[in-house]
Length: 484
Ligand code: MN
Image (cartoon, rainbow, N blue to C red; front, side, top):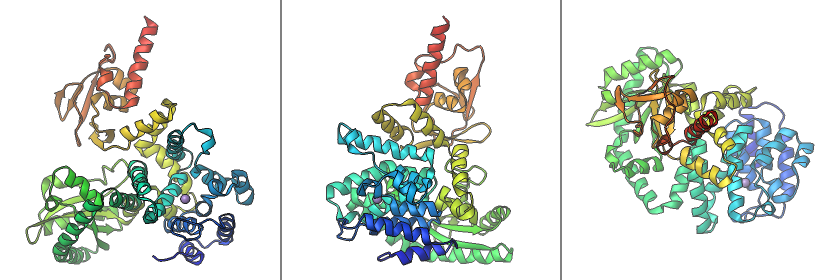
């Protein structure tokens, strides 16, 4: 996409919103006037940036308050107007959103580092107030990353690192896969340019090689689905460069990555997903141990799909993903999909869903309450939430997400404080394990409790990885001391 203009933005909004565009025009001219005389490093007038941010948001079918906030997002920080000015000129919601993405003023801090930590915390915890703050911030970061070539190489590396550490994980947690993938690849391109190019080249070569096979399977499945009167749309999806890098980094070869390219089958009705699965398995033999039902067991960011890997022609393995169109929207856009599916109450649904279904949200709230110090808070979030996670099952089949390195102690306290406090033993996949056993993906964990147990032992503090488990262990011993 070349230069984006106000007309482009208005046209984009018209695709999904038939209301008056006057407020958008007003926000644009308001921001343009305030930013007059300011320029980006590229030499363009500054307004180009907020305009692009608003366009990214309109592409997600954002509501009007969010679009206006996107246009105004740098005005408090860069032009000296206040939150009250925006509330007066627009409305309190827009003012609150803009304020949420505004950096804290540097005069309140002793050092640049202290300021940056406080800002990171402000961004992350903004989600508890209004998830749209994070979404605007992600759109802001996405445009800045897309135009990073104009910055110094020091800034390029610094911003890319921050994108990898903070923004890509945030996008992942709210399920916004498209944004997450693009952010990761942009950041990776600046952090490891040689590797990026190398993987990109190799991927293109394999892609050329694979495409005829993929097209052949696609056509065949499509034909058979239509015999069964199952309406479908089939697309080829490819893994992003950074996703490939992560797998190569675990010691695998590119040719071993079975989901480098996948066929994505989208279907109207849920029950037809399983019919389609049966049909795919009749046409191509499945690799038994590579089947996953994320429809009945959604990922912790609410991703839903059936994944199966089949023996395809020409000695190839191909992954087939089957899901409904609605699930596909969530798969690409996460929480932001509600702007499209429930435009009248999207904001409330987003906030509600976060609270009830997204596990990271409650961990975040807890850490925010636990750590007064910004440095401790930020490093704990990075270590516990934004580092790679491990996914295990309860005996009921619910999926629990924990930081890598977690033990049955963390699991028990995640289920309930009482479960942790009365735990006497842990079984993983029906075998008794030591209490400091490190949980692995797909472990099925059963905790044995006894109300007469002595409670957590002091060495559990060393074995527990999560701050919430450690806090509860300490609380228990403090209470016990109090009683004695
Ligand atoms: Mn900005």
